[in-house]
Length: 59
Image (cartoon, rainbow, N blue to C red; front, side, top):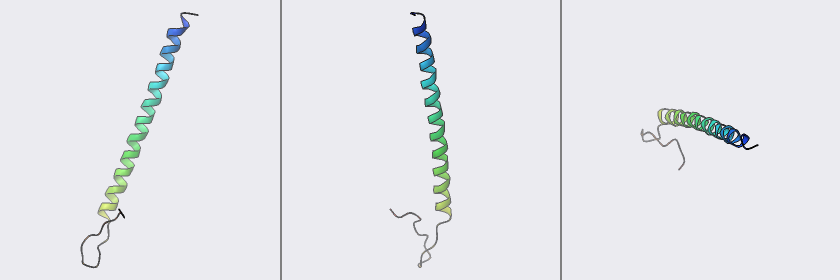
């Protein structure tokens, strides 16, 4: 029974690290998608009546 504790700790640590790695990879993909959307909005923004480029966001 005592020898099972280190094995369980190692398995739990591997599971936590795998979950963290997956979450970080998903966050990287989300950041890339947001960056692409922002760049597309920046490039494709419309000109207002004065000929200047307007803001594509509403903040």
